[in-house]
Length: 236
Image 1 (tube, rainbow, N blue to C red):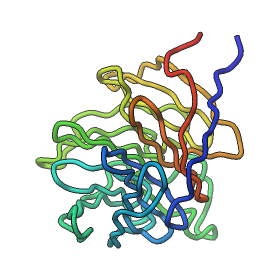
Image 2 (cartoon, one colour; image 1 turned 30 degrees about the horizontal axis):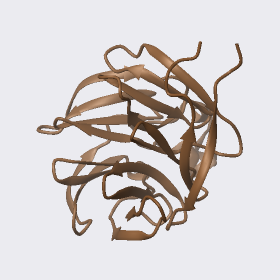
Image 3 (cartoon, helix red, strand yellow; image 1 turned 45 degrees about the vertical axis):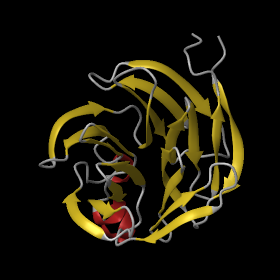
Image 4 (tube, helix red, strand yellow; image 1 turned 90 degrees about the vertical axis):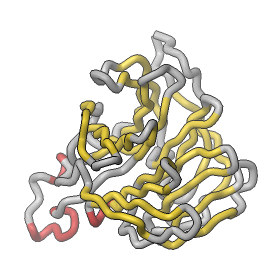
């Protein structure tokens, strides 16, 4: 049986230089930009900017909305930021649950500079007071109780560069994008069991990912925003 491959349907270019995280909302698409560390909300149809908030985060890679706040994975400071929804100002800062050295960089020494230093988390999701955190260094999805910011569960992620994270229609399941492998797969959070997968061919790289009306949207960190046209049920 042939591999399942998504068609990437370009919609518009992001307003910032390096979009790296997405979160769907009924009234617009939220974007965190790793280049300028601004939070944007844009119109779904046109990409027009509805909200533009500067943040204190550093080279960020994930965003979600929950509990009346914006949550951002500040990847290069190895922190999670809780931000005011209206201003983008910092409310609280927490340590990244998955900070460390990416597996593909473990062999590097100090001469490699920034590549040899720890980084933090990427994709984020929120549900019922819990923050779900995809972390390339740890290769886990960490589940955090935001009432005390303690980890209550973790799920081993596939591949070595887990990035985008989005809720699946199936209860307790998430879609995970591995940017390096070019694969998006659906997993049961309880134990990581895989139920579906498809490829995303070059040149598109899925960094940020979110879902609206059972359609996965992607952000390529070189600018393009679009959706993945693919059968959302297993074909094998």
